Image (cartoon, rainbow, N blue to C red; front, side, top):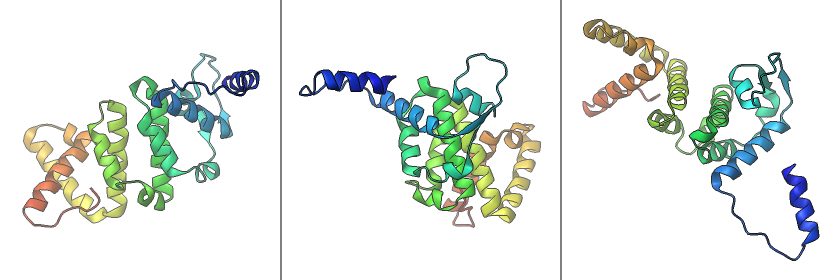
Length: 199
């Protein structure tokens, strides 16, 4: 609907250059809508509650075709993700999950991201708790795959710490687990001992 209104206004006043008042967030949201609409997907929502495609995706009621996702530019996904704020929480989470999926299934995606694995580490400081949580889950999964033996060793240390402090959340919470691992990794680096390059 927005594209038709834009075309009609441009045809009525072809010599007039419209003043751009759209914010970065609005541009990001519009592009996200456009790109998401391009992807064929299976809808299994029977509730008819009027939920957006983003909400349905997060509830696993909308599925994006994997072969088409592989063709979406990684930097574009990142740019859209970075442009959205908490007011576009669902769309932002969808973009993050698409980025995570690409990084898991096509390792070169992580190399394409500015900062690489550090991109996800920085997301741990996000004010949007769900963004920090998904970033934490990805970092743990990445560590498990890249350094399985080291991860098992540090997980044993986490279990010991959890028992000593009577705080099972150190292991049960993905966010607290990766935060503790990064803290322990930082200590290991300062002590010039073996650290975990995965985080």
